[in-house]
Length: 252
Image (tube, rainbow, N blue to C red):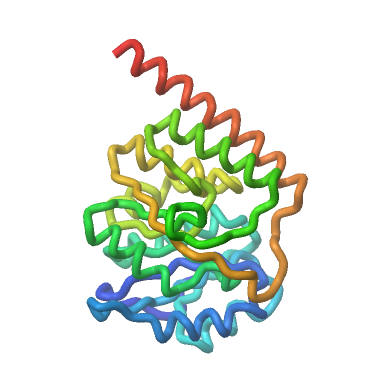
């Protein structure tokens, strides 16, 4: 990973943005982040983790005064987020937001995520399906698969997730420190397994309702075969955790 191109004031909220060939969507998205603020006058500093892009992703990020972490080759979302968390830990960031570069996540919803941290949560998940989140169209098969993962997370941890696969999240410093060397790199594990890890560490996880927009450009990087493989791998892992957790509760 190359050295970042600038440093970040510790008073700002860091937005870790994994990006792989997102030159089409990135400019408008970064403009939105530049104008973001809240009632506490916090601002967002974007940290673009360029995950081996072959387009102008890194150059566009620099043009918008973002910090750029360039990975030598494509690691996937989980690997990119882990790199971003290590940077945030080194910067002693107090609050970190994980947000996609494709424009699907609405930056205005960051306020709700940070408010949850301000109110005592260690990790806040932006849920597309919580009460008040609005309408989000997901295919029947994907929705069924996601509901199964939500169920297994509840069995494994007791946390009643409505959107365990959401990548739109906010962490306080304790979670950043905990996950910087533990963040799962496998696809889907980078969202679902994180909940199991953080809950298992005794840290508080909450969900807040958020909206979801259409992708503003580019194409998804994960094919259907890769998605199925990682889903099945994750299913086995979380199901095993749920069985072990249930057994321990019974014996205790």
